[in-house]
Image (cartoon, rainbow, N blue to C red; front, side, top):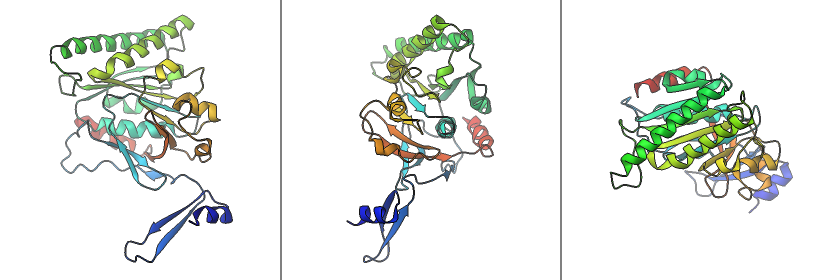
Length: 299
């Protein structure tokens, strides 16, 4: 009852009250200067036998503003991550990739126009296009669409609505680090063609285990195509310049303006179609990245 008044009195962002686990008449009052829970180191998932993990499991992402772990299953769902430079997009993408890399029957393919983040994951990727040239990206997208068509024809013979990940038909995840730069070396017509191919892949691939992880540091209505965004089930908005940039990622009406007040690196607003909730992504540092990448090679 007093938490809001205490927050005003101390000039802080939030007051949390936790029950004492041993004494019913005691509580702990936590005074948070920021809404964010703060940076939390990434710990690999508990895996005592060292075998590749179930791809349908809930993948841990980080903590909510109360310190409770956030985890969810992404199979059959495409993901969009956006935020300004320095907001923690790479951290968020790394956590996603770490969960996917440790899974069995998951095939990672990627396009990295910046020659940066995905290069470190090269050993775990089946295909990786580096650079923003048009032809290699178009070739990869056409090959993925052909695979989607083959799977759709196979699915029609199974009397099933969805295709579960197997060694024969693994879950294919197309990772694009800096979506806004996709095919930037080409002209307007060529870039429009690439975006059309990407939309077709997202639209047709879900039922047959073909999805995408799109990342961008230009979260504006000009660079985030609304039609493509609509095909992403999970959207994460990290620190943005203003409400309009957050809306370009999450959509209008999915969050309250005050939710953007605290924007610590790695903290995102997450919407899976409904109201946005906060998640502080685990921090997977450069030093720990090689052990995660090479552990995934057992898959």
